Length: 597
Image (cartoon, rainbow, N blue to C red; front, side):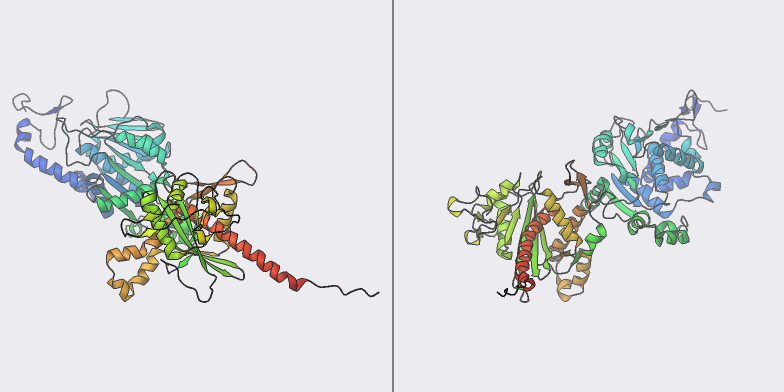
């Protein structure tokens, strides 16, 4: 019989702790270094901890897949873990399992699991935890013993589920609607793509403002604090969480010790026998399954636009046919009437100026518009940076017009354009340029009575003053140009890069030069993202509508710059068509013979 007093047996709830042997203080002290080594090892390799405690009989029939081991390790090692996976990859089960392992190995952890779908997350959690207990019953033994009713350490309701562990760790499963005010040291966002920006920033993120402390009250500098695990099936690029994915992907390059981003297509669950190939192929070639839906559900590809989108993403992609970016005006011997128009928009809350260069090629049936260059000047001063750069582009393209929205921040750029400029980087000097349709912008001796530029006075800026009076016309014209095929955009950067690397010139390029070469094509892809993020909103006034962003995290400055430029191109196109109709009218006029007396 063991003498509990003389051997100082470790007790829990008054019962000796038995792990194969009865634990004594002397035994723990003598093996402290060994236990510490195991715990540190399991924190880095949590899947091996699960292998060690899984019953042998269960291990014969159930083992973690290789990609699940990657997910478990990423969840424990990184502060931010973003996982996009298809259906049937057991991503929810793996995420819940990582929460339990964290709670057991890190005393005092406070972990929340949240989803946008109220009620559903509770049912999923209950099923996943029961599955975990079935495979690893030792984990369930770590739950607290409740004094009255219910299961051990478990508390649940219609929209709330809580597990409390013997080491003071806690897992709370909630819908985002009921999570406000909680405090957590780590969080798992289940099907995070459905979570809106406001809910993430104002409800979920504030929960993780406390760090877990060790039993002695100290902080572990090696532990990823406020760990966030994002799990989802791919959705439209217009949702907020796509922007979060891009942010994490960029940070994974800049701070690889803190961020882990990855994705799985259907090949992985197919390889492990989790889905049936015949069923998958039936879905892929079904007339009722769209390409975008299959891409999201089975390929983990985030697609262009949502159901609310104003424009058709397929139609936009069909317009990306231009392989050649023009960085300055190119002569067109076959059509000397070719000219350029530059559209400019300044962001309202950031000093960013979007510039779109349109090459206009007149023909008998109208104008062909090629968007041959795009650029964004980030966070620069109107006078010292933006105006000199825009004037440099004027020298390069000799445009018929520069179209600038003179509302709000555009006023600052217009004022800067009306002053002589000096580029401190290159030493170049540039003259002033004026808005020909703004009598307050032109000097008194240069008043303009027409609606067209005065190039002899450098008055080539059109102050568009976009607003309720002309928004409908501007938006409708853009939709028409995109729909009728008269507008073309630069091709996708992947296509251009592939062609570039097949040439000797491309192979010899440095990484920096290649980046500069491909940048306008990449900026066109960002334009496409903006177009896919637009939706229509009725104004309440008959035949009037507004264009709004679906996701507030995606700007629309490139879109605005482009539609302003196209609006002025339409002015010249309508003028040409009207003139040609007058010329051709004579052939349809027949003179009546003079009446005889």
